[in-house]
Amino acid sequence: MGVWVFILGDMVIFGLFFIVFVYYRGLDVELYLQSQATLNQNYGAINTLFLLASSWFVAMAVDDMRSKIPRLAPRFFVLAMLCGLGFAVVKIIEYREKITAGITLTTNDFYMYYYIFTGLHFLHVLIGMGVLVFLWLKAKAAVRRKAELPIADNEKEMMLIESGASYWHMVDLLWIVLFPLLYLMK
Image (cartoon, rainbow, N blue to C red; front, side, top):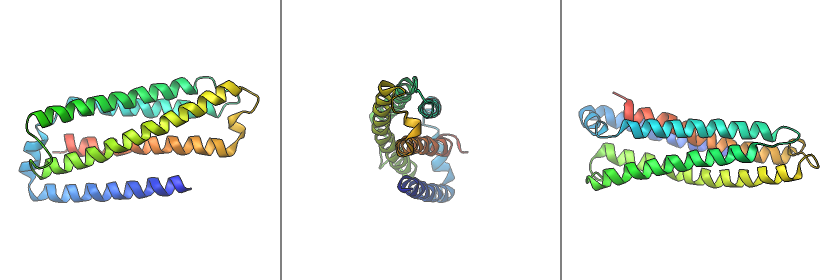
């Protein structure tokens, strides 16, 4: 229950951020469009694919963990972590390019929001990577135990795994809103 309260609270806060962004964008559409044109949509699209794939891998891992004898969950969690790492690398490259070009948090209102929103999201990705490592360790232990103590029969363990997966899916969902809001909205 606590994870759902956290996820809902996080979504509400980001939702308010998005409303504020759209409001201020409406006050100076031209500035926002000019600034948006300097973003590399390919980076945003690649990152979207990384996060969508990572969510799919997490869903597959959780599904495998529900089986009596999980076998593939650790591999799926590793693939999800690799996608998260790919996202982080692309985002760092994008930040480096912007900062090298002299585009920073203080360039204009669009970039202030861009850096704040993507920075907060990046922090969520890093936390999520820690969660994925934890889930991977749980999955490895479950595979080692095999059928001796199926994790699917342990409601508390499954709730923990599903809570971690839900957090990761929330991180992905936030990006699914951020990407079009920052990179595509005309």
